[in-house]
Image 1 (tube, one colour):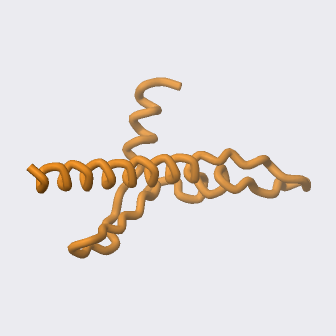
Image 2 (cartoon, helix red, strand yellow):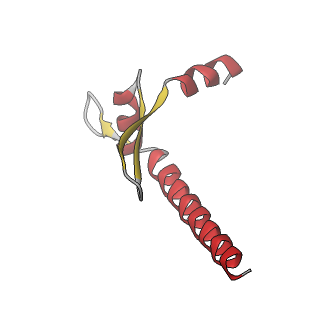
Length: 87
């Protein structure tokens, strides 16, 4: 894989803000150019002559890692705020 192909793949990803309130922010990350391919890779698909192509889960693990990172960041920030209020 070359740097230019990596750059191309990264540039195809976009983030869209769905909803924002004082307490929450909902974002959707999607591939603008090859959205069908990402679904087929994540879930697997049927082959023309029968059988199936195995799935390559790559979105779900990244999503779970992002959720954990966000939750840890929020907890850390809350602890920092609590410490500052005590002082």
